[in-house]
Length: 179
Image (cartoon, rainbow, N blue to C red; front, side, top):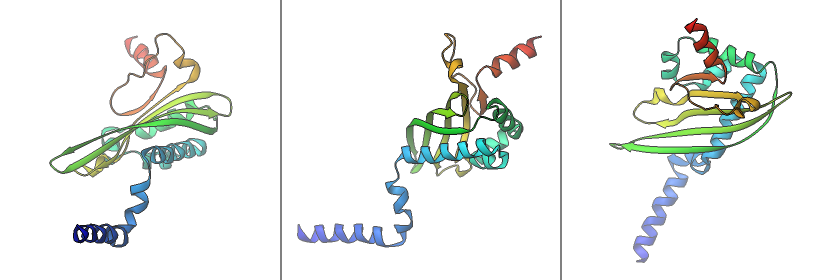
């Protein structure tokens, strides 16, 4: 019994002190802390209206699927009407899957934003890990709505799989295309 205890202790100690010690902070970082960190980066990019900073948050595969991503980001900045995101509060939901020893972790960040003149709700969807397809790591979808928009009876977060979606603007585009 003592021998197995010492062997187990040696493996744990080697893991903590050896080459894996560089990953130690990630092991102890909660998904909520990770999502809050991403939300802070989104808020910083929005406040600075920095398209390049926001582009870096999106996955490489999303950038390939979204040739108009830069334009979508600029539209997001216009939607915020220059309002500075002062604070945010939210939750992170996550799911993980493992196929043939290859793991993938998805985060959904759901936040309430306090801006200088308005309140917003924002959701982001991202893969924080994807061992099989590393080009998927990053944001692939971002949704935003003014608080008053979410109070409408027919409001739903119901948009396509990839891109930036602004409440009310999807319907406007559909109406323009129908005419």
